[in-house]
Image (tube, rainbow, N blue to C red):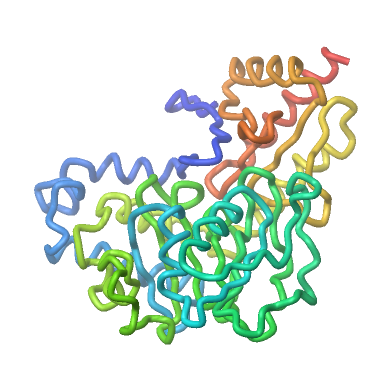
Length: 364
């Protein structure tokens, strides 16, 4: 627990923990942002002051991810669920797409996309409750596929693509919601990246889309809603309508925090260190067991079980009393899940493991 603010260690999968430093800055600027006399949440998105906020956020994100000039950065609304529709609406030309289904969110995206074209499931890990990432080195890619879709980090099941699929020249689309900015990314390997920020970057309500310019289209079907057209948002610098202004401001603060830390290489190093502490304990524990195959493990989301539902409940309640909260696993999986995003301090993971060790000694 952070003694200064009496804060718990929050292992929620999202909305999730934010850096203390970011929250302190937001607090200090809440009533009067840079002598504007108002809060960011009160100011016009057309004002010069806010224009600088959103443009600075984009510049910092481009720097962090080394985003090439031929990619647009969009700050949108609607969450990842809206992207499940926007992606096929905007990218389907031949009316065919291939989906790799490695978890609940990829499955939802696959089902949603079927409303707009012929959508093929070319690989899945459903046979083992999404506990691994399938071999994607030589997939049966459809010759006329407009894109190949993945959910890169699976929040619920705790798996991660450590090697991108071989798309055989087809455009790769990735939902990076729960691993966004956790490690360096080669943006040029993707046609489109999207991420809901509420897991690793900011408060719920902002969706970041990074899209290659050649995928922006003037020839979308007439029935396509204006708000679902990427090109409209790109042409208007994410200001076609009132954006989630305050959320974008917080994201901008997080980008600056990441830069101050040393960027994504440093963030990956810290995340690997945190994850190792937890996985090393799980691998030797007599009570707790990780549910993911080792070569598919996520650095961000770590599900684990005791094998006994009542024991799981006892652990979750006892952990809560120790200031270790939001450890209950997703309702479709059960057990426990520790989401250890960028803003989770290493002290939080250490305290969790120390408590797990204590609980194990008292319950076996």
